[in-house]
Length: 239
Image (cartoon, rainbow, N blue to C red; front, side):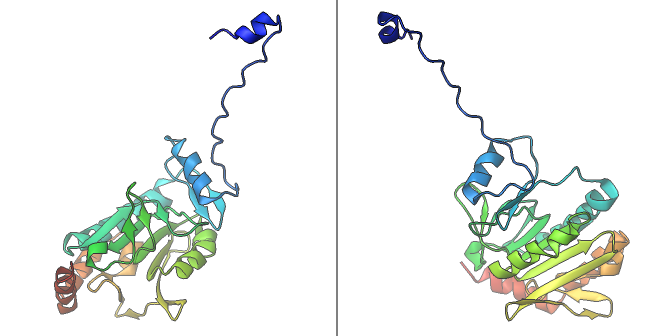
């Protein structure tokens, strides 16, 4: 379009200022959740970024033995449980809107569907809003965050159980929220049993050693237990 006003006045029109590009997400940025989402959506090639206590964390490329393989085993274990437990949903790396300053992207979430009385829900734009009943993280280089700020954020927002697989320490901690504090679930005869998801049993030693046949054999015992059957019936009665 010709600028007739400046043409008539014989004045060179000012240069057009191009629209500002959305700034990229970078680790250490301090942003609101709204601005975090705006920048994240403008970076379709970015696969993972988190907002923890108002600070952005963009992880480095993930290695196979220290993250990819443990993550796969964790999802397999949780996926089998979800298969035999209707009205329970499993998410792999979903973005979770917890509060105004926190939007993590956990390695795995296990939640009870809202229709069955779950404490989280799916938003109209398909994000998890609120605290899933269980969150699991594979912690290699991120261990200080997962056991520090993230743990405090999950506790404050009411995540009922929190699993942290500390790869370099060859250790799995499974926390249960009680009286607003996280306490470790007991290990009985080598097995840890969820209190929120009856029948979700774990042979932590087998999982640490990637002995998946043993992991799934113990899980099957939990799925076959009376407590799991009662849990399934209880969920089925809710609408």
